[in-house]
Length: 225
Image 1 (cartoon, rainbow, N blue to C red):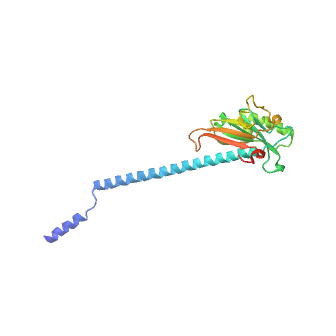
Image 2: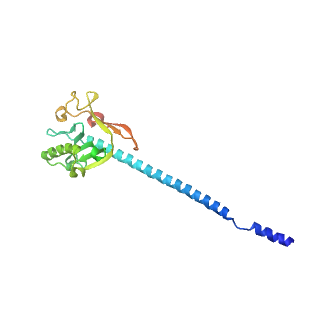
Image 3: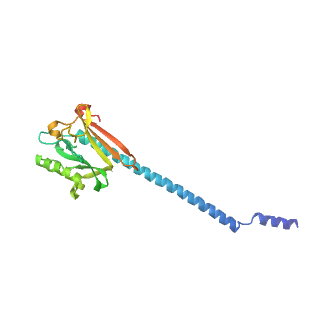
């Protein structure tokens, strides 16, 4: 009898899991797998979103640096307009970035609805004559209103933009270049001492809201902006 009890006790202590216990264990493991997958998916989505936001900021920073570079390289001459704002596009005649041998170019900044409401920069090829300048100066204005396929190849999208405004600094105050108080032709009146761009960035981006960019002529502000 003692030997029989020992055998029965051994069998009870070493019996396998019941079907219910196995189902419960499988359900627990499946739940843990789902929670783990959701956690990993959330981390992946967060990382992707962070990288996208970082890319937006880097593109915006590059665009703002280019904006300043265009104004810093502004060229002056008796037969050309150096700077013009017509309420839609800001056109700049600038020196080439590769030095005197690069000649001059026309750079333009605008916002177009057909480009997704993006703030855009356009640049002409190097100018070799006054006729080239006249052609591309007019083409920059047309590009801001109705860009052709060839013009679109020369544009770069900077950031989404709800609206933007330009102000000139003259006589110790900021004013609208299109107002009757200030002349529209910068060649005849002389360049402003500063240019201010007020950008309204839409929500949902890495940087949203109003952004103000001030630029001062190097001869006035020591190259600081």
